[in-house]
Length: 425
Image (cartoon, rainbow, N blue to C red):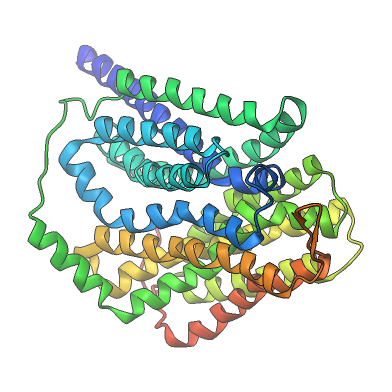
């Protein structure tokens, strides 16, 4: 009996180590996601002083690949296993990040960004698949929750460090170093990760059934409304945190690049704290819509103060953006809302479809802010560089409070599923 316990303990520790390696890749792809926003000024100049519209379109290529891949990635994971797919995905991210550093070619930069998005689409599902095969079932929800927190903490660290390193050694060397890290991580995943204690067990789902389930979910109007609500809340990350927030803070609040990076990272830290709290409160109260709407209203207040209240102190900015992240993190509730309106039988497909719709917000909103900057910005071009004033940014980033206001309007079209009569365990 002791021998079995020892083997079981060793297997558990090995499983934790394998999941940890997968989680490193998850953090790595999250850091790749924010690189355009962190190095926006440097990349814009290197690419020939491109406009904000073009820069937003390049950044959004990540989501052009990432979003549609959410639908088939679960089926592919079941068929080929996490070891092979995570290795392949990490190689894609590595090659993509290297291509993105080749700023002499706009095509290679765009293709690299697209490839990073494609590879990143496997990360979250891959780690959950490893947890499902290696860890006891009672830890699965914990791992799923910790992944969101871990990803946000990776962004907090990456935002600041990439900015500091780019100022000290140059952004070209930073991108080269990131690609080297990806090479090492690809090798580590291939050598260490195993699909499960008993190896890979292929689970081939019939394609007709897969497409039938996808069509059924995508034909449900409520899933689209709920997903779009999530996309509006997710703008705190996809628009402000990942791309436009840092340059806005530098321009509007006269922060240095490092100070702006640290302040933007407060949004990520807020998400890391707010996501598990939002999930707990929603389950504990048995309500979905109420915390979602309250989160949107409070997030709207926070970001409006940051955008339209001049002369805020450095501490005030950090506190407000931290709270903006906390309240925006109620976005995670949309996943359980979508499942409850569609039924448990299609839960996997519903989660994938909802995540696809949520991340499609990046496809829409990232280039839209750039387009608004170019449309309403009237400061012209100085020495080949596009100049945008504080007012230009305020107009373009009005998308953030408007999207949160839209959440409160769309809430009237969503049925709230009250679970207060169910026992809380």
